[in-house]
Length: 290
Image (tube, rainbow, N blue to C red):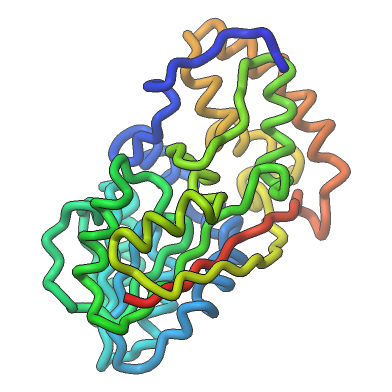
């Protein structure tokens, strides 16, 4: 492990309502391409039907919301919820031609949803950021009608996700990065069924099941002309390595970027496939009944 400076816990929080949401918005099309395979798996688990009412939690740029809106049709409804003003603005523009879809700027943990208003709760990687997850899912359970369903995707453990493991391991050469733990405010916070299932059950959901799925994620596609440069640039801007470097002062961050960028390029180069760095991902598909 690197012996460099360790960012504070507060600095490692995910400011979706501020800087992080803005950075994602700037790279939204790149991030949507990267997460498209995850969305396809999540939407298949949801299997939305015409006329259904779906709550899309952590809707980001609205790509999945648009696909779900098309599936439920004019007689259905999709309510997309996100805490990032920048991403909500992008999603609203994307969904302008789909009146059955609405995007609101709100925290799913506390928003006063109408009780039983939805047939299904859906989330593509949007559930791992609540400070009080049980309370949040009590609120979300209330929003889903009795007998309604849940379809959620989350990442499995870091070691099964090379798309994140590669930059993490490079970063450890210089920064004091620690592996993510269940319950953390990051993409691997829901990686352990033993941590998550009690949250859902305590909140009132039943028949909780877990299934693994494998995907290949294009890292940095379209972010720069050279695929390796694209992957390096995205890793420096978004992700655990980026958060660690952004927690440093300006001079230390510049030094870290200069030192780690060549190592990132070396690590990503063997994974170029069809003109883009492509790395494996392992997901959990969580299903439950309200």
